[in-house]
Length: 379
Ligand SMILES: *Cc1c(COP(=O)(O)O)cnc(C)c1O
Image (cartoon, rainbow, N blue to C red; front, side, top):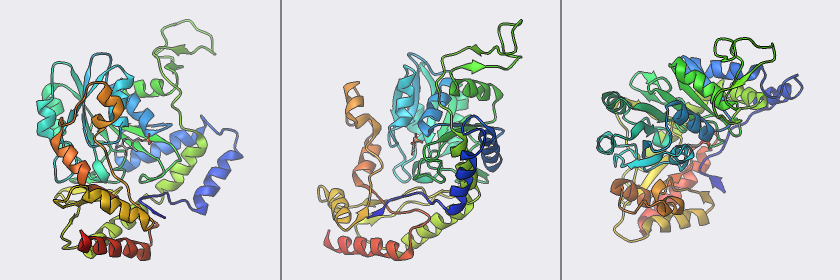
């Protein structure tokens, strides 16, 4: 099976992890801050905090934004469930905004229409690795006094105008799941320029505890004293994972270049098909090419599923990204209904992610495109 994505691990990565396994600290040691410094430098953000997963990082970011019971968080409908779930964790309500049909990214106009007195934060997802309309989202958040969070789980290394993503929203989340730009197994991070968010994120990551003398409520205290000041979690990344992350970061630009070259070759090989629409390029936004999502264009019912089944049968691990979050049974039981975001629903019904990852061989890519051409003739 050719998967739609997979990690690229080399012997250098393995050596880096093995070295930590022999070191005094395998968690809460020096590799964590080193990884954070590398990520902050790469993205241009002042602060970076790594977490045990991208989902944990989102939970922390919504918490740091002050999201709580009864608040609303605007998120795009076309995303991984975690973008919505993190609001539910805090007793808040995810409010789904529709997408721009060309990119799959949140439609800032629809996000604007969904703002109420209860809205606390707006979230943009860099779908497939392509930055959302970050300028419009930022202006919207500013105008209404909302926190702007970017779920860039898929976008490490993507660019919006001249800047890399990571310092363009109030907080930006990255994921290091094996299919993402770089991997630590499980893992995630938040980048931010804001010191207050940074401090809250740090405490949230580790039980709500602090040892910072300037922060302690108890002024006369013993040397061992630490205080739990908010209800946090254990969302820490380990030193072994951080060492893997540091090693992967050395290769990120190479990974991105390979993904970009594969995307370019897909465009060339799949040009002019009748039933397949290729992803849109947007001026001023450079994708990290996490996914290559083609859309099946056909008046026949179930055409996408026919393509999906034919490709799976031929050993090509295609995927669908995503069922609009509110159509999952858990969300339907909360009262969300079909028809809420028509563009996201249409997109999801036609989308199919075909393989793209740094180690995809040209030969395997050609197998994928040959099959798509054959299916195009049969549809
Ligand atoms: C991968 C992903 C997440 C979750 O990240 P994990 O590290 O798997 O927890 C959240 N949002 C989006 C858009 C993602 O692609």
